Image (cartoon, rainbow, N blue to C red; front, side, top):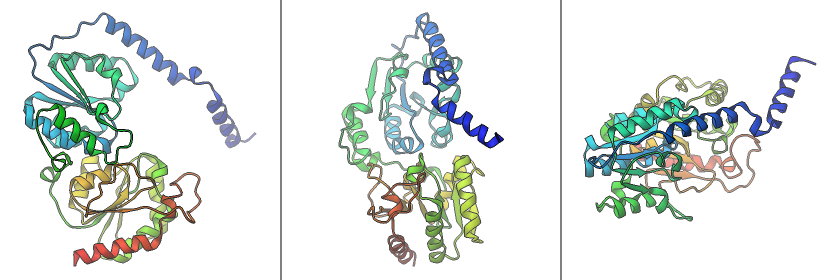
Length: 358
């Protein structure tokens, strides 16, 4: 039996292994057990004299960005020294760029008990009167371990048939924070935190799942259209991780465009945000970088495979969806709607954008 066949067999056996026998499952259970034993003997700090507010925002990058307008309103209401954000450490630099006080949810917190204990102690040392859980799905396992007088949950304001993701945030702010704002004030706005420009085109090559991304051959077709429309502009490819790096390397090899610059895994997240802030046009999918481009009010061409409520249907946002007819067949990337987007749809948007820049 060759090494490759043996490797594949082992992979298949691993997939067949029951969940409760997997080492990651066992470690997780053990860590939870140890943490719960510690917590039973732990006495939380008294919060009676505190006026501090803790905002929990531990979901994906795009979710964090769309909530940043609400975070700004809370900070304006209570004062910067009293407001803290508990956020995924991956997005910590974005929030710190906005001068927020950040408590990071680290990889250690998610996987072990030591960082969990350390985080709970740190939060209780600060002391919070009010906790605002800004997650669309409330983080009950975390909030149940905190001391507070008031708990506000965004989850309570989300409707089953929600049409636009900012609507529940708008309802929650007006209902609970004792300030009256309009929807425009809830929108994320990063313009004051970055230097804006009008040079180059940024392409976000990835998303949270491959079903939201074109097959490579489709992306190559789109980028050739972009190159033809903007022959003098540099095209910057942004993304992170092995999958997106491999995806991009294949695209660049096929394209052979001189003015295309592959920055996947080459720059930090904040540097990527800076590149978007400086750009003339952003092109991408339903991803965190798309919401970053929206926060700068950039011209955007974005491809969706399903209506999700995250579209930001405004003049500067050109949303393209397919009709499901004659899609590229790919078992890994995209779906029938995304993979059936026509060349003519892209050309039409590029023509509109080109006229705007004249």
